[in-house]
Each structure stands twice: as C-alpha cells, then as structure tokens.
Length: 538
Image 1 (cartoon, rainbow, N blue to C red):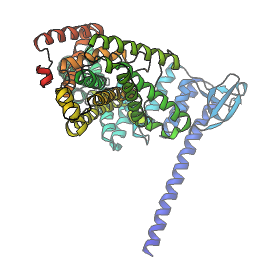
Image 2: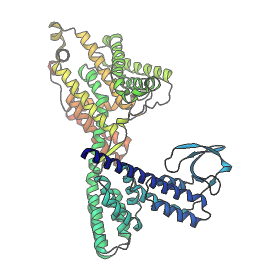
Image 3: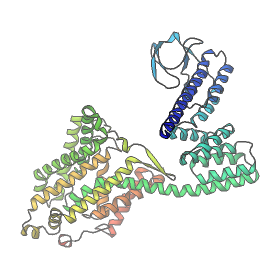
C-alpha cells in the first residue's frame, strides 16, 4: 500500500511537471504569435517584452531571428516562422524548436520589422532568457556577453541567475558580469569597490579592458583603486605571458623533436647526411591524408580513429622507402659524406616531384578528430588539444625509442655497430643489415612525425623542407647520436625561438638561433651531450 501510494505521488508529480511544461510552451508560443499582429515598432517592443517575461529560454531562438531579420509572419496576422531565404522561396522553421516545417512562396510571407534601437532591447532579452537555459555552455556564453557589454539593467536578472546557478565556472562568470554592470550603474562607492576587487581577482585581459575604461571616467578613491588593480593585473598577465611563451615553445619543441628524432638515428647514429629525411615526413603526412580519405568515403564511423590507423601505415610506408634508399644507394656511399648528401638530395627532389604528380601541387587538409579539436584554459594559459596531444605523442615516441635502444637485443646490436663496427662484425653481428634496419627505423619515425604534423600544418609536397634545417640544428646542438640531447635540444630551441619571435620576427629569430648555435658549436663541437665510444674517440 505504501509503495502504491508513493507511485501515485510520483506519477502526479510527473504529470504536473508535464502539464506545466506544456503550459509554459503554450504561453511562450502565444506571445511569439503576437508578432504577427504588430503594426509599428512600439508594438514590436511590447511583444518583445512580453516574450521575455515568459522566462522560457527557448524563446531566445525567435528573438535572435527577429534581431537578424529572419522572423516572418504568414501574411499580416498569420503564424510566425523563422525563415531561411532561397532564390525563389523561404524554408520555414518553428520559432521555438527550430524544426523544419516546410517552405513557402516569398510573397506569402511578411517580415516582422525591426530597427537598431530594438536590437539592443532584443539583445538584453535574449541574454536574460539564456541565463536560465538548461545547457551550461549557453548560460556561460550569455554571462560572457554581459561581461563584455556591461549594462545596469542586467544586474537584477544576474542576481536571480546567480542565486540558482549550480555550475561553479558559470557562476563565477555571472558574478564577473554583475561586477562589470555595477561599475556602469549608479550603485554606491562601497559596492563599486567590491566590484573592482572581484574583477581584479579574475585578472584577465577582458577585465583589464573593462577597468581601464572605467578608470577613464572614475574619480577620487575609485579611480585610485582601479589604477592599482590595473597595475596588479598587468603584472600577473606579464607572468602568464611568459608561461604562454614557454608553452608555445614546448609545443614547437615537440614538433621539432618528432621531425629530428628520426634524423638523430640516421645522421647521429649512422653518420649519414640524409637530405631526403624531410620527404619521409612528407610521405607520412600524405599517408595520413590518403587513409583519412578512404575512411571518410568507405568507413565514416571510424573517422575519429583515422590517425590511429594512419600511424602504423605511415611508419611502414616511410620505413619501406627508407630501406629501399639505404639498400639501393646509401650502402655504396658510406664514408663519402659529400656524395651521400648529393645523392639523398636528388632522392628528395624525385620524391617531391612524384608526390606532386600523383596528388597535385595544391595543399591538402587533414581533418582533426573530435578529441583533438578545441582548446581549454589553465588560468590565463590557452592550450589547444591538438598541440597537447602532439606533445604527449612526441614524448611517447621518445620513450619507446629509448626502450628499444637500451632494452632490446636489436638496440644493443645497433649501439655496438655505432661504437665499434669492426668489433661488432667480428662478434657475429651482421652490420650491413643493422645499417639497413637502422635507416628504415629513422625513416619510419619521420613518417609518424608526418602524421602529427598533418594536424597543425597543410600537407604539401614541400612540407618536409620546412623542418629539415631545424632538424639538423636540433641534432647538432643536442649532440650527434644522443637521444637525450635531441630531446633537450628540441625543447630548448623551441622555447628560445618563441621568446625571440616577438622582438626579432620569425625569420630573423631563426637566423639569430642559427648564429647562436654556430658560436655554441665553436665551444662544444660535440653538442650538449657528446656520444661516447671508440669510434668517436678515434
């Protein structure tokens, strides 16, 4: 009996909420339909206020369409629709739900007139309605709009919204919006001082701009307080600016690490100057493009996994081509660096022209999967997801290579060949195949670097040429043949480059870095971390 009674109570609550919801929608729809009876701008203003008074967030869609000039009535006095104009007709949409309804001839529809003074009223009404929206992102956007466009009339709606808000980040944005509105209101000095303190604690560039505008008109104690707060915000933003540059440097360093780590193997470990290394990066990027296009057309549900599928493919394609280059050309040129440089340069031109002939000279775009799109903030630090994933990916590749070199039998054989080729050969190690597989590994790593670079750069036949010089600088600066040196060199040059760019520009900044490296190599010819071994000592 007790359970039955509770079930009846729950059913009654659900029915009541459903009825109330339908009643709210009906009242809102009835208010919106009154736009069809308006004959003057004053009539439109009254209906806007009536629609806003319903408090239904769904009405923001109709008001937004009105402000954009897309709200129409089916002839004067008829039903209201949001329209999308076509060449000879209108597509019709429900003003509350946004659902497509059908189409209508243009001469059967009459536009609800609006003017600029009404658009301000509409904007305020939409802001107030969206403060009550169910979606936190909509409430956050509304609060942000009010923060950037302070208006004393928004104080009361914000007070009501703040009292009901449960999302902490949205609530903080609403409180900041209220503080900005207080500064342009006729509130007392004590409340304005509290508003300045709240905005000062927020300390971002938007609030800095607001306080600077307020300081220009403030007087007395409030002007002094605003000036002191502005000074504090500038100091804090200066530190955040340094942190942002460090992050940009780490982001650039991760790209350099991916592009250079394969070169650290072929040039640093094997001593081969491979001018076609950039083309291995380019081939990895084009493999990603082809894989994504096939997945897009044949398996669209797997599009978010396209990069994971492209990674092993890019490694195999670039590694296989690297193996062919080593077996077909480079193995005949060991100990002849000039001839190796010229031969690999010729290979790079052949690969560029082959790709240009197959895919054309135009840039190709590789779409970011959903999990690499967008950005988030850490304090005043803006971090994009694609850059963050590339940093983590570069570190993961570095860790795997360290494990391969130090913890696997093949890695130990490769190190033995590097340090003393004759001794390694006398111990039964097949040095020619170690050379071939090492070159293939370096090329394969360049290929998966191309997968990552396709997410932040256009895929083109010249993609690899943008990174080849920087990659050589990283390897030489860090120490030829030392993976740890490559890691430190990539991030050091990336951070230094980002701190020089604001003062010297991108091109001059790179030139300055090159000059600094030349001076550094004069003092430490083996780089930061010199490779030890009998071959080096000899």
